[in-house]
Length: 126
Image (cartoon, rainbow, N blue to C red; front, side):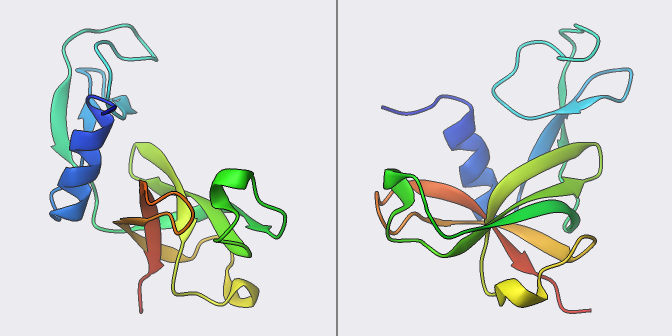
């Protein structure tokens, strides 16, 4: 079953056309939304997602949920992309080198356990 709004958002990320939803007051949120979660405005527009974000927190997972059993160990991170924060799996990085402030790009990949599409981050070379 498709997750209307979210699946389309992931497809946009995969196509390099990521976006977030913005209200007239400048609050950012992610689809699916019909109203701003901060102020309640229903006037939402699609704005381009910044190409890179920075890690604000992360966790190295060694004992995963069953739906991520074939992924362990892996790093889950929250990264700030302008007015929105995204949560994803960090790929192509040695967990020992992951740090707060690390620059990442949003991408889309596949969960090795379930085959589901998921949001991924990849380090950005400086």
